[in-house]
Length: 624
Image (cartoon, helix red, strand yellow):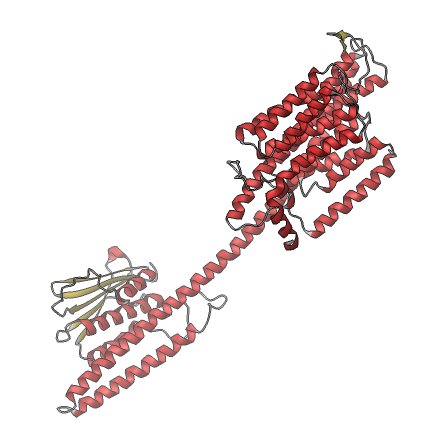
């Protein structure tokens, strides 16, 4: 693709040559077919060619020139040859596509109205003023036989559908061009070659609401190979089974085969080609062909692979196609059976036949479209289920990560409690021993023994915590928060209080009531709360005044549980005035205590009152 993109980029400023080249090709076709020279016909063809050449750069002028060319043909008195009518119809299709692709919003819808109105006008030129004649039978109405009116009506409907299909392609080109321009602006991929050829050559797109329609879908190599091979097999089957070897039948089969090949790559183009094949089939007088199976495949593809606009066009095509097919088959059957007087008693039989054919046609075509829609819904549901499964997997991974992070946070909190408490005791003992070594040598030995005992205990706790931290996630079946090694409980508070006392802070410990009904998680939380509160009192409080710890049974109105109260005298220090406006740093001690109490199902408050710092916590019992 890089080798192809380079010449395309170099040719980008010259894309405006495409439309003038097509106009010259129409003139060349006129000369090749050997049409006689006629001033009115030549002037009309000049307007057609000018409309095609200006459809990219001046779409409004091009639409006006197209109408001038059609009006010139309508005012021509002499009948023009059928090849000239075909050239004129190709010019109409090309201009409708160009105006829809490059015009603004208002001009685009004027182009749509023109596509509908030009159908009857060109049909009149093909039939009444052209070589395409219908059988003359039935009563005369305004100088024309009823059969001629039905033929003109059928031809008008067919050409209007072809012109609207051409407009639809131009409309989708404009929308996808705008969408891909937005994608390129956001770093998206380059547009496909077909859309590049139809783009405006650097002009700003005029589409206001690009909803990313897929005029050309990207297929894998296997899908593209399958579609092309399937179209080849379809062509061979139709030619062998149908037995149609005339030129018109071969052209109809080729149009349907190309539509089958493009049904998945470009459902909109495939639908347009299917309508073109159907028009060729009916205007050349063919009845039902084997190649008509392609219509079902195309309708299925519009619902299964098309965007919202293409799906709607496929549904409308199913209804209109059923009406046209029923009308065509009814008229041809009536002509073949000799029902030339449509006002005779056979009119009831003809009407009943039309109703039956319409119901059968709309059922078959509608079921093909509905089947494609069901397959699309099933495919969307499968993608949604896959996305939901992936989202569930991501959610489980996120929950697992949260559990791991909570476990690490708990370990870090325990590490903080152990290290902070132990270091506070060690520092206090070391300072006391340093000051007392001259007056009381025995106190030095006692302090060193306390330091060794405290450090040894802390080292054991740190080893347990580090062993837990090495695990990346909890083991299967292990509840969050579970860990190896014995955990401290309320029975270990005496040793902690002794460490704090030996560090220089007098502590009183009281137990009131029945406090034995706490679970292991509540006991661990109570131990850590008291340990952290005493450590803070040793580091920040007045060590000359005793601290008190009260473990009391909760009152009856609160239910079973434990009330912890830790009081210590605050140290009064002169705070320096701050001029920066910075907030004081919040440590981990108080938030950690509150989180422990909350995780255990209780609450904690910590505040100063009358020169004392009071920590109060409530932990519910195991039965709460």
